Structure formats: C-alpha cells, structure tokens
Length: 293
Image (cartoon, rainbow, N blue to C red; front, top):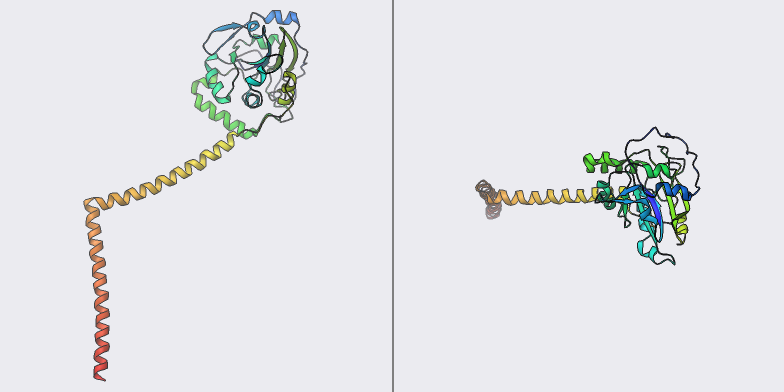
C-alpha cells in the first residue's frame, strides 16, 4: 500500500522556517511505532471514520503526502490498473490534514483516481515523524511542471474559488512523505525535508515494482490561462461583430432607420440626377459649338 499525507489545523510552533532543509531520516517506522498509530482515525469524504490500520492491513499499499502538484504527476504516471497488474496487487492511498469536506474539491482539482482521507488532528503525521516547515528547499523537483509564480497564481485562484473553504485546507507548515506498506510493515519510506521534497516519481515507481519512467508532461495552469485568454478575446471579438450586425439590422428595421434609409436613397438619386444633367449639358454644349463652327 502506498500512503500520501496532506495538511491540517493549527499546531505547535514549526521546527523549520523558510530556509534550508530540516534534518529528518528515512528510517521506516518500527512495529512498535505502527502499534501506536494503528487505531488513529482518518476520515473519508463522507465524514466516516476509519482506523489507519484498516487502510494498510491487506495487500501492498503506498501512502504519500497530499501535495496537489505531486498528486497530479503521480496520477498521470501511475494508474490503479497498473498497480493491480503487479505480481503483488498494490494500491495508493492519500491522507491529508485538511477537513474531509474538501476532499471532493481536491479530487476534482488533481484528477486523483486514488482514495483520499483526512487526518485533521495531525496525530498520524507527528507519530510517523513528519515535520513542519515553510522552506522551499534549494532544488525544484522534476514532478513540478510549472514555475513558482504560476504556483502562486494558481493558489490565489483556487483560494478565491473555494471562498471560506480556503481556510479549511489545513496547516500550511505541515509536510509529509511517502510510506510503502507490505504485510502490515513499512518496507520503505521518504520523509520530506522541505515543502517540495516528495520522492521523485521514478523512485516511487521503482519502489512500487514498476519501471523508473518519468511522469508525462501535463498541460500547465499557465497554458490554461493563455488558452482561456485567447478564447475570451475571440469570444469578445465575435460578440462585437454580432452586435454591430445586429445594430445595423435594428437601425434599418426601426421607423427612424427606415426614414434615414429613404433620405439616403433620395439623396443618392438627386446626386445621380445632377451628374446626369451635367453630363447632358456638356454634350449639348459641345454639339452647339460644333454646329456654329
């Protein structure tokens, strides 16, 4: 089983701030450690509690921490069908520390095909040795397929769209990790040292028994913005043309429009008549001059 972890509510002071990696190790939790967390509750999207042990007690499971960009890359690189086709059927489970009511929105945003649970108390995080920090670290990971400014814009956009729910997403300081469970024990784990320190996708795939392929390139948020902007420009341009045609039709069909059209036509006829008269006068003058000579 693969387990991914998410974010929660207000906790104690963080152990790290904005700079540098936090010193954590990747030693798997012992049986004694797992006994302590076995009965801790996690909650599904319907608000139903489950014991942590019930998520990993059968099959092989991987539990990663819930970061949107990581989960997007994970979801495009690893599918439930591919995991079930392994010699030992495997599943990925995502555990976050926000409120369970946000799980449907989170699933939609990330297109995650794996079950997601919430641990708002963050007790699971603490017991499994995961830390709190706001440090970005010195390296941009491969699984992030957009720039930091794009990430900020995306976060603002999602916050505005979520409204009050934006404040229910959990503790922004909390980072997590990835844990691979086999036969009820953790055979491999990776604890994050900063907010971008997830295990890279090729490493996660290898640990799961798949190949070490990199995640496919995805359409980024910024490309979506550019595409939406172009679509809006075309839409406004079409609307202006449509409005202009509609205005012309309206002017012609109204009484005032009909009168103006009539005046315009009469004026054109007058001008045509004047031109014709002048041309005839010239011809007559030329003929008289010829006769006189």
